[in-house]
Image 1 (cartoon, rainbow, N blue to C red):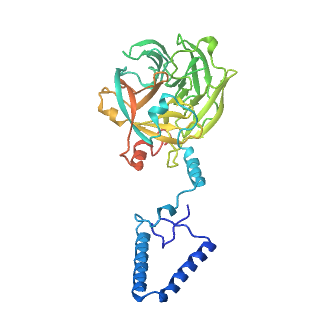
Image 2 (cartoon, one colour; image 1 turned 135 degrees about the horizontal axis):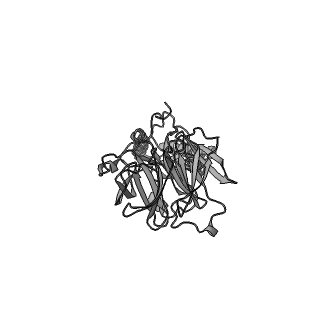
Length: 385
């Protein structure tokens, strides 16, 4: 839309008649004035008074946009302008087809809060690094800290650890994902990835992430198969379409592929806030659908909703209200997201939290964007100082 001229102020715009129509209008005015001497003086004065009144009302309407003289002539955006605006918004919101129950729950709210639906016990000694749901009220969890790092199979309702595999004492466990029928666990300060049998949690392989990563740190890990209602049968493994995403404490979201016994980099995008700033320290990841990944932000009670194709954040989820809950004396940072796709349930927890929560999203429309930015975006990377 063109900028308004100083004389327009906040007035609605009006159409300019073509030259031919202007000439007709001018001719009509001339004819009317020419008729004035042919009528009685009183009638002429009355006509002049009415003309002055109309002119005054017209001027008043021009100076007050709330009183347009002809609403049919108000100028609205053209279809091309509307289309251009929608294209500009496309990068900052989910795109594509139906996202199932998540689409109904999430909508396009820029900022949301977590509403607690249910509370479950969580091991307060579990330094949660990766979390995912895989049917039958069962969670799988990767824990960190040297000498305490494990991969666990956990009963949702009781927090009971049904199976576990402990790593070497020197390992510091990080993200966890279900991919190509196996569990994969990242290690911190290494490019190492452990491969586990999904049914027994036995270690079956050790691999390395691509050298193209910015840093050696392994942080978040998530697959498009996380959140299924059951493990794949050996004959039902997806042959294509499965995707695996990784973060390394920097500003990138990586998509990788494992084939021929090697991890290869498919794509890397820079994670950016709606204001265009880069986001560092995206931590635990969860793929919600093809159009969005949720990411914890280290040391922030926030979740970033990220478009995995562009890296752009199109929404924030505030979790600071969870701090009002009883989380245990050793509760550390907010970290851990799991999604039950078939049940459309979301679960969150934190490192050494004594509770795990099933949550829903509710819109948050009272907090200004700048405040959300301060709450959710780290000013610097504490691991890179």
